[in-house]
Image 1 (cartoon, rainbow, N blue to C red):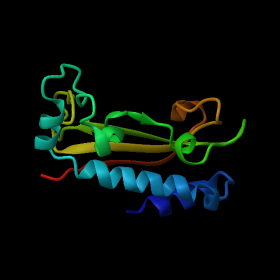
Image 2: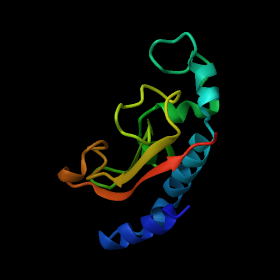
Image 3: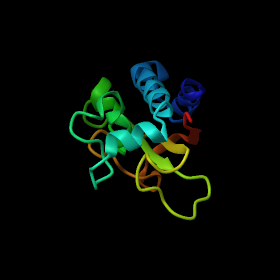
Image 4: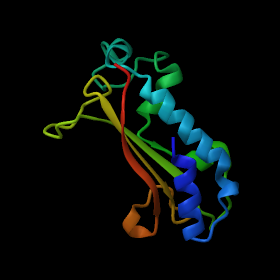
Length: 144
């Protein structure tokens, strides 16, 4: 996975020390590897009987991170002070044809990953147009 390389490049480009974000980088790499193992049949089993498309209570376990959508990585791993940049991860199931959005991890064979530096710790979900710096945006194939 090339995320650490992308993180170094973006960090240098905006004047940040990438070494300060190594824990976040590893967290994202581990999350992507975990979600890539979540097969459609596993998701069907976890989501069965729950109309929200989320795992039933207790069934998410190791894959619960895949269902969060937005993950405030820095807050989970290495909280930053006021005015400091944080890393946020957006992770969602996707489909190849883009004709209909997936409802859950039971649809499709890929997922999208977007990782970005936030404007500051007070604005963890700001968009790229509001001062965030994209680190990577990718579609990842899931296990069959």
